[in-house]
Every structure is written in structure tokens, then in C-alpha cells.
Image (cartoon, rainbow, N blue to C red):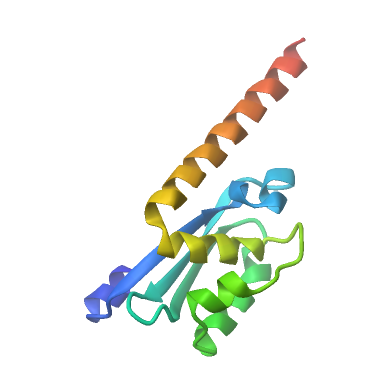
Length: 125
């Protein structure tokens, strides 16, 4: 987003934590996907991914940018269950609802932390 703003492009961003997706909860909760979009047109202008299988899902993000897709295009798409591609939809929604996204990320983090405490307690028992 800093790069867009340095070029006087009005931009918004949305972040999706891996632990907000079904695949993240089941397989690998550490990571995130960030979409950067034009603030007025909602055209996706950037994608950042850090985490497991980032190299497997960045290609979809590259195609979204190349094809000048919008946040609405991503939100309205159907994604297969138990894939990290769901993160694109979560991040697109986060671009449009920053406060709601923060609350969802906080809840996902709390739920994950609680599940980890339960696992540790079971291991000690």
C-alpha cells in the first residue's frame, strides 16, 4: 500500500490470516494474504502472501492483477473447500469492511490460541 500511495494511487488493503480459513485451521495457521486495491474502482493492484504454500497460491493473485479484477469479482467467486484460495475472498471482504475484518481476525486468533491451550493441557494430562 505504501508503494501505491507513493505513486499517488488511492489504495486500500485487506488482510486475511491463514487461521481465518478452513485450510489454515486444519493444516497450517501461520501466514497471511494481503490484497491491495484502488480505493475508488476496487481494482486489485497488488497481492502479498507470507506462509505455507504461498508459491502455490500467488499465481491466482498475479492473474487477478493482470486481468484487472475487482474486489467484487473475488467476493462473488466460488472457491473450493479446504484450499488457501478462500483467503482471497476473506481479504477482499476485509478491504471493504476494515473494522469487521479486525474483529474477525481477533476472534480467529483467540479461537486458535484456545485450541492450542487445550492441546497442551491434553498432552500434560
